[in-house]
Length: 575
Image (tube, rainbow, N blue to C red; front, side, top):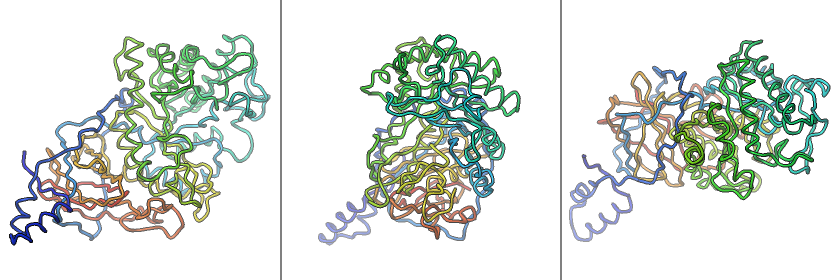
């Protein structure tokens, strides 16, 4: 193994100062001292998951095209971080379904008329879109315009949060504002995405039909009727279906039903078998997921027993297991470092599931592919208080630069951001596109989070490779295209600038690469910059971001060297 020139600047300064005082030749000493061995960080969790059936329709990505600017990055400054990527063997093929998003039924259906938004969404490469919620899924009646059109037993009032909150049934075809199923279908066709529909499981619990078997069968038949409408009647080939949403949470409809009590995880698993049987009788090609619980520890008795009671019931019939994560304690005010460091818990989602599979079934770990059908960062920081990184901040965008790569690296088969468009209040907004309530920016303008999906789609290939680094604050996500190009994402999750040297091993890396730097010196800003271009608006990215050319990055002897600014992401494509 060759040694590499690598030394921290402060050490260099001290050594040169010492030698100057001794009257020694600093140039000679420096040349001798900048040779050291590689001291890689060794605590990165290994891959825990297996994309499984999500790779059944895996496709090669070929011939990525980017335009290069006249700006050339080429310097020989001493490196502060050394990284290495070995392209001899991929860690995993990349499921195209890790690039997904959620569309809420509450979204103004006029979004379909916004061509700029449609093109932006399509260009970011979102291959799967989930509907109609979230929490709304469990009190949503997809084909009803009024309560009389809901299935038998639908109550006028649905209770949540241990009867402290109530809601009326949400009707799929009610009013002139909300997104209907047919609007969702049209969006899938326009964006060339497949769907993931979350059917109403909790109707099986809160229906006014007294007999449990009849109640469950009616609910399963109602779910199957949606499969029929989408895939048989309309021939839409919606691939993924989910049975309920976060049913282990007291905020869900059906969690606690008067005179019937709190949800039983074992019965949920039993009911899922009935749902799966009836739904697949309509369309045997669909893939159906079952709700899981993602945290290793909880005081809630339902959540504590959820996986061990559900998984044995569904292990032979479900196609995938559903987890959600927002990478922070609810209500926490996150600083940039905290927001980005939380991503390192991604492996724990899969570990929790695998431990249950091995302990309570005869299957091996990885048997159930994982779908992270909701994920995002979550911070209770506010713009007005400037007390941390909000969900619409530049830092929130950098979160996705690292999270997407780590989701792929951990073998998650499908993931969806929560969500496309939401509500806005003082920086609180999970929407990837701006709400009409947000000041200083047009409705459906991309938030900082959007641009990272856009550049992943542009420069990241079809196979993922492991990387090594000497600094845990510098995260490298590496890929190749089937035509030989290498695509890398270099993420700096710290507040310190580093000079990063990356050796590309066992690949013909050519002599140059293109690079898009996503950066803002203020991580809490609502604005994000691309190759030093910024928007004139108060939030988002450059207006003409699709016309921004990549800066040229010189590759010498398969080595890339670049400056990694604090809280930044560099998207690199070898040419």
